[in-house]
Image (cartoon, rainbow, N blue to C red; front, top):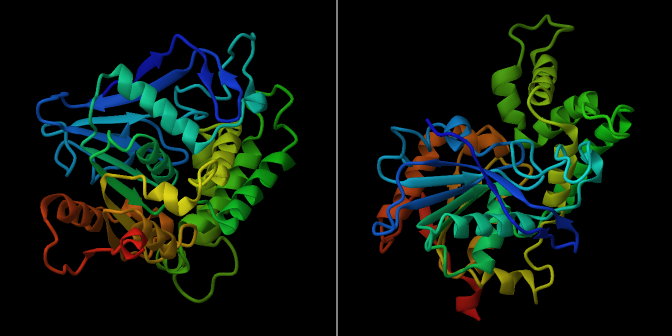
Length: 357
């Protein structure tokens, strides 16, 4: 078992926006024993509403008997800026006597990566043998690998993108409209926005799954149902489930951070930014992913210099990275343990645009 640890910085944390977070706190979990001589660090960047206990939410890939286990690796996962689970976020009081809530400053995936870098320095980790992230986690891992290319040796980016799409932003804004429509949201109400959060999560589920996934798991048996549909109750269940463990203010902050993700911001271009990544990289897409379509991962693999591309076949859309553990483990094992001198059926080398130039 791993215990969540809180690292408190002594100085204010400068955000990309110019605002500051006073005395940043970072919640993180570690598993296994750090051995600098073996270069055994696996660092996980988590997605939107996850926490730093990766053994809890990524079972089948991370665990005592899984591919990434504490017997072989020193595994680190840090909770992200603005989240609900211990790192500085909307529920902090800072210098006031009440939580800042919707007044928490705007953060970006670049800010999140820079917070990870502070923790890396605190833990005295010189090299990260493997950095892995999916979705919003992949966006963080990408930014970190661009800013600190000499630190990351291997990089795995799953169901993510170099710039968040107009379609993804539209989905996020639709969810935020549900938050704003809840009259309890804001105005100093710590528990505000609960009903809005339920609706927002139900909307999000439509982008996380697929037509075939819903058809497979949420279709009522028989031909005579006129009410009480499984799909309807599933949406309510997912909304309630999140509202019991998360807060609407963090959901707002993190969704806006995802919208702002663009590795080309304040750099010459997206393509040039991706070419700064020096790590051997595996980019994984999911065939049925509506939110992060596979062409976005193909783009990454074309522009990251030493990149390999693999794909997952799943009916579960974007959530396939949490469901298809057998396929994911096979792809990652292939990437880590083979030299790819021959063509392989599930993973292949991409000729980068830089090489063609």
